[in-house]
Amino acid sequence: MRKYKNTKVEHDGHIFDSKKEMIRYVELKLLERAGEITDLELQKVFVLVPAVKLNGRTKPAVKYLSDFSYVQVKDGQTIVEDVKSPVTRKLAVYRLKIHLLKHVHGIEIKEI
Image (cartoon, rainbow, N blue to C red):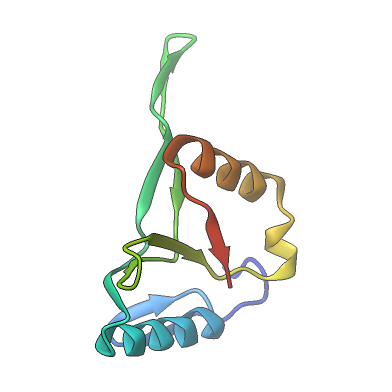
């Protein structure tokens, strides 16, 4: 079921949540071929809060799943990107997760 009127798209053996995300992937692949970025990863998982025992039950870890991550060759900086619509950028859970990602891993999200 689609969440935000997006249409899943397949390209290069990957399924993307939207056409916009697939287009960004193609752009990043071109940058990788040009030698401007390295270590391109899709759907990289970042643990924000480890699993905990709560009221006798184990609760799973809280994770952030990025659309893309890569390293810029010019400065060695790791970049984490997320393709978001204006609606999803405002969601409380998303805002909390990017806050935690900055605090826990020192990484700021580059929103596309």
